[in-house]
Image (cartoon, rainbow, N blue to C red; front, side, top):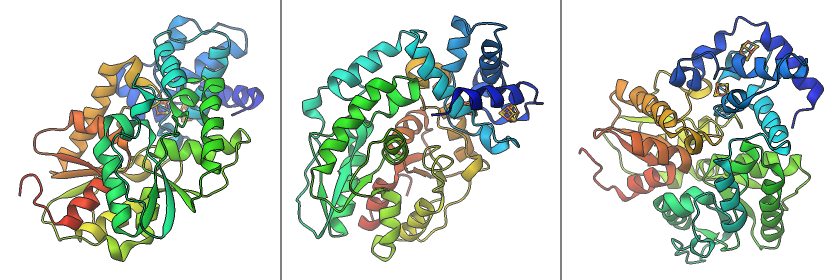
Length: 374
Ligand code: SF4
Ligand code: SF4
C-alpha cells in the first residue's frame, strides 16, 4: 500500500504530463475516451487531494475501469505506479462506502463461499485425483478459476507434476487467495481469506507451495507479507517448477506455430518472462513466435482487477484485441500461464487458434497427441 503523501506527489506529477502512456492503456483503447486513462485517473485523485473537486460517481467508475495491468508504468519516465495508486484509492473509497455496488456480490461470495463465482465451497476440489505418491511434497494452490472454471488446468497441473515424481498435495481447506478483494479495495475481507490460508498452509507438511495462477502467486508472495502474514514455506509459480525440471519436460516436436501471452501478474508484476518460454521451447522443440506486443509490452487479456465483473463488454473487447495479436502472426496455439487469462482468451479465440494453459500444453506435448489442425 502506498502512503497518501506519495500518492499526492505522484498524481501531481502525472497531472502535468504529456500522457503518452495512454496509447498502451487497454481501457483507453476500449472506451476511446480520455477518462479511463492513467492520466485521467491520476487527475481525479489529484483534484480531490487539493480540494478542487470530489471524486463523483463517474470518477469512481473510471477508477474501477482500471485493469491494474501496469502497462502504463513501462512507458512512464517518472515511474508513476498507477496500478498501485488505483488500488490504494479503491481501498480508501471502499472504507468510505464509495464503490460500485455490483461488487458486493463478488465480496459476499468470497466471504461466504471462499470463491468469487458463487460456487459451493464443498465442491472446490471435486476435480482432484491426486495419488500422493512421489518424493518432494508440493502443496498445489489451485486458485478459484482453475478449481471452478478451468478444471482441466488443475487436472493437467497434477498430472504433469506427478509424472515428474512430485508428491502433489491438494487441500479442500484452500480458500480464495484474496486477490479479487485486494484489487477491488475490499482489504479487510481479503485479509480474512489470507489469514485462513496462512494458518492452513503453515500446518501442512510440504516442502513448497506451487501456484498456477499468477494472481494467486503475486498475492501469496507480495500481499501476504506486506500485511505481516508469513507463510512458512516458499511459494513458486508452476512455470518456475517446470523450468527446474526442463530435461524431463521434453515432449514431441510439433510443426505448429506457437506463441506465448505474458500474464500481467507474472510478467510486469513479478518479472517472470523467461521460465514459461523455456518450458514451451523444451516441451515442443520450438521457440515460441513473439506477438508484436510481448514481454514488458504485452497487453492485458482484459480479465483483471474486477473489469469483467463490472464492464464485461469492454473486457471482452480487450481480450479480442489480444487474440488479434496472435492471429496477426498466424499462430496455431496461444499458450499462456494463467488460468484467468486462459479463461478470457479461450472465450474470445477464433476457430483457427487453440488456447492452452502451460500445464495443458506440456501434457499435450509429452503425450504426443495430435493437436487441433494437424
Ligand atoms: S502515468 Fe506517467 S507517463 Fe502516464 S500520464 Fe502519468 S506521469 Fe505521464
Ligand atoms: S494499469 Fe493498465 S488499465 Fe490501469 S491505467 Fe495503467 S495501462 Fe491503463
